[in-house]
Each structure stands twice: as structure tokens, then as C-alpha cells.
Amino acid sequence: NAGVMQNPRHLVRRRGQEARLRCSPMKGHSHVYWYRQLPEEGLKFMVYLQKENIIDESGMPKERFSAEFPKEGPSILRIQQVVRGDSAAYFCASSTRPRQADQPQHFGDGTRLSIL
Amino acid sequence: GQQLNQSPQSMFIQEGEDVSMNCTSSSIFNTWLWYKQDPGEGPVLLIALYKAGELTSNGRLTAQFGITRKDSFLNISASIPSDVGIYFCAGLLGGSQGNLIFGKGTKLSVKP
Image 1 (cartoon, helix red, strand yellow):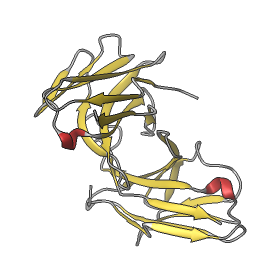
Image 2: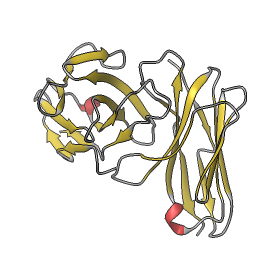
Image 3: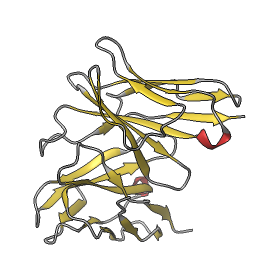
């Protein structure tokens, strides 16, 4: 589990501020996924990225949310003008080749976002 | 969107008991995964299943990929206190880009 590194672990923001969540995938992994988890719920897919490309953003809200995975550095999930409903745990997962049967996703420990 | 129905929602265990939980869907999945999540942490992969009918064990854990490809179960034998936590099933649809669909979880607690 420790292979996927997320920071910060906890983030507090006031309504209207921006939140930036970072994810460094496991060594050798070039596929990154972001999920959101509300209390007492399962994880919900948001976006899937490879290096410098967004592959699938079908689970991400159209407004205020964006994600990137640059050639160098971690993947970033950015939430602009946060609202109370954005409070959740955000998890990042990585894998080597997602379409191959033997390459499951491994998760980080998440960022708990709280909006005041 | 696609849904996985995971049951039971919660259960209490006594040390030494066997535990069983399952996930069902109306859709066909190519991959089933079982994760365990402890409070304040991310999901940890327990077992991955890739073929219909496949039965895979990991220590005291056994999971099966249903023949119809619409369900999977997880069994834990001779449970111990550290088994408490939330167990999630997750599935990958055929043709998917890799985004997992998760069940709502089964919360395992120790009987008082």
C-alpha cells in the first residue's frame, strides 16, 4: 500500500478556496486513477490518466475539477472554488498495464479533504 | 451507472468463525478484485480473479469468480481479530479503460 504516495493526508479548505491533491504512483507504474469516497460508501471512479494524457474523465464533475499527470512529477487533482459537498476522501491508484489481466490497481492512503 | 450489490452490509464475527460475503451485478465483468480497507487507510488488494469459475486462495481467504461472470464471493476461514475492517469488491467491465466499479462494502466487526 505504501508504494502509492499521496499528500497531503489531510487538507482543510474554506469554501471558495482551491484544493490540490498529489499522487506519486508506484515505481514503474504509468497509469493513474483517482477515486472519491464518501463516508460509509464505496469508491467512485473520477478520472484515469497516463503520462501527459487524460484517458477517461467520465467520472469527474465537468466544472471546478481538473486532473493532470505531467511528464515529470506527481499526478495532481485540482478542485477550484471548493464547496462543502467536496468533503470526502480522495484516493489515487496506479497500475502498469490496466487492460492486462494480471495488473491490478494498488491504492494510496488517500487525502481527506474537509471544507469549512 | 453500473452498480455492484455487496452483501451483507455488516456482520459481527467471533474469533474462529468462518465469514462469507458476496457481490452481484446485472452486468458481466472481466475481472473481480477484493480489497480490505482499515480506518484512515487506502484499500489493500487481497485477491484478484481473472477467469470465470476461477477459485483463488490467499492464506485464510478464498474468493471465486462466478460462472456467469456477474458475481463473486469471498470467504474468510477461522477469523481472527485483525480481520475486522471493511471489505470491498470491485469489478472491471469488458471494454473498460480500467476504471473499477466498487461495491458499498461489508463491515466486519467483533461480536461484543
